[in-house]
Each structure stands twice: as structure tokens, then as C-alpha cells.
Amino acid sequence: MDEEQNASAPYKRRVRYPGKNPRHFKDKYKEHNHEKYPDDIKKIIKSGKTPVSTHRPICVTEILDILKPIAGEAGLDATLGFGGHARELLERVKPDGCLYALDLDPIEIIRTEKRLRNLGYTEQQLVVKHSNYAGIHKVVSEMGDTFDFILADLGVSSMQLDNPERGFSFKQEGPLDLRLNPNRGHSAKELIKRLSEKELEDIFFENSDEPHAKKIAAIVYKRRGHLHKTTDLSIAIATAFNKKSYKDCTDNEKRSIRRVFQALRITVNDEFSALEHFLRNLPFCLKSKGRVVILSFHSGEDRRVMRFFKQGLQDGFYKDISHEAIRSSSEEQFSNPRSKSALLRWAIKK
Image 1: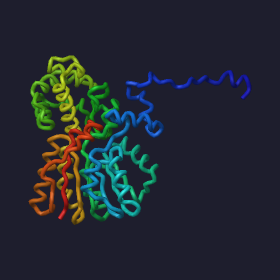
Image 2: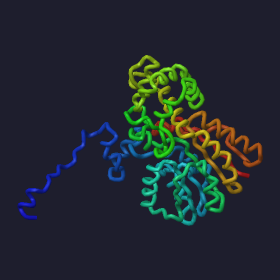
Image 3: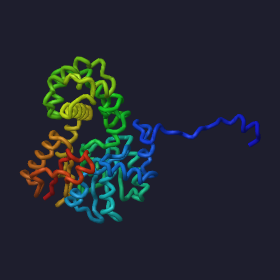
Image 4: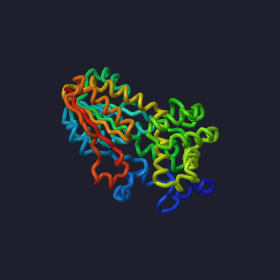
């Protein structure tokens, strides 16, 4: 390059990051590229936190003990997420087995498939489909056979919770959305605008057992035209307890904020209806002696799983089920606090 060209070339400064430990999601460059910073990620996990843009699979040991996947089997991960469970299952069914994996999130499913392909799993070993688990019967129809085992982790992935742009976080400002698939349906903001005060109260109570559903619904309904961001909603709920923001709330009041967000997310994504459809079709998608494990994260989900499993046992579809929910170990709860609310149930097909 001659001197004239060099003089006219734009000067590019090296990208600098705001501080050693950035607070904002978009600035957490190490955690967004966790493969490049393994030592830093280990430190984050050791401190009992989940690195941004990742998700730590829950109850892995318990799930593997129950499902007992072996080489050559065909399985289904009905909620792929970050792929932590899927990777453990794939390692056990390879080289000749196959794992089907479903996920409703069009953003994360692409990243997860790429990550798993980079680990060497072929299209014959791993079949990824952008689908709600309610469509499990269609997957069985397409593959022409039933599954040896099925796993469904009903929790929202940490990648979705941590990214304020997805509209799930009540701690950081983002659009009041809460859709798992942002390309379909109506956002939480739109939902709140069209519901009555009584309908909001019913959603908060029935979906999340919120004890203060009535007074929270009253303030949310009153402010419904001004709730555009996630922080607008969390502040409105805090106001119901005479507090200014989430940070000012007591632990119990913070739990109410979480439950309200959870209740709205369940409604926005029609999660209970999808779960019931999945549970209704489940026995017909398992081979004889097939195993299924479902991880739920609140009482509304767990009640449905328990009811369908008990009914399936009574109707002769299952030969055995878990009569009590299994919790994550105390060690896991300490190292991964997000596992504390996990409720694991299983069933075995006749």
C-alpha cells in the first residue's frame, strides 16, 4: 500500500471492554465465547453461577440412572435447550443409536445444533427439529417408529433468562415479551393490555400459585397502558408491596415478582395446553419398556405430570411410575442454585 492509500485508510482502534467484570449482558465477551475462556468459565461455575449464554443441565446423574440409554437405542430430547442433556444421551447411544431433539426457540436451536455438530455428531446420530414437544406424535409418524426413552426438561433455559433482549428478565430492562418463539403469538405486553383485572388475577393464581394475586392484578391492570418494558412490570409489582423496585423488595416479594413473570410466560406460550397434549400422546410414543423422565419447575407443571402418569398407570399404559418427585442433590443445589426448584418424575411403559 502506498503512502497516499495508507493515509486515507480508516484507523481502527482495538475494542476495549468496560471493566474486568462487565455488568451488561452484551459486554460479557468472555461468557459469550466460553470455548475461548475455559478457566474463566470454570471459576464462574465454581462460584455457584451459570455463565451467560450457557445452560447447566440439571439432575444429569438421576436422569441417566433412570433412562439407562445404551448404544443403538433411539431417544428423544423433547426440549433441546443448550444441549447439555442431549450431549450426555448422545454419548451413550452412539455410534449406531439416534437422538431426536426438539425445541420451540428458533434462535437458540440454531446455536445448539451448530455446537453439537462441531462435537462430531452426525445427522444420522442427531436429528434436530424446530418444534414444540406437543407435536411429538408427528415426530413418531415421520420416523416410523417409537422411542426407547424420552426426556423433557420443562424449564426455561438460562440463555433466555439472561438475555434482556428476549424479554424474560425482571432484573434487567428489555421488551415485555416472554415468547419462547418471538415470531409467533402475542407478547406479554399485548396480553396484559387485553385482559381484565379478574383474568390477570386468575392467571397469577392458577399458573403460579401467587398468594398476592389480587392486589398485584389490581396494580398491573391500572398501569397496563404504561407497561412496555420488563422493568416497568417488575416496578409495578413492587409498588403493590409499597416498594420502588425489585432491589427494594424482600425475598418473599421478589418471589412474587418471579411468579408473576412465570405465570405470564406460561399464558403467552400456552405452556399448560402444550404439556397436556404431550402427556396425552406420550404412552403411544414409547416402545414396550420404554422410559420417560420429565423435569418440571413449578407446582402447576408437576401436578399435570403426576396426574397423567397416575392415570396412565391405572389405564395400563405404564407398568411403573415415580410416586414421589425426585429433587436435585444438595451438592447440585449448592453449585447450581437454579436446580433447587426442579421436580423429576419418571414412568416406564408396559
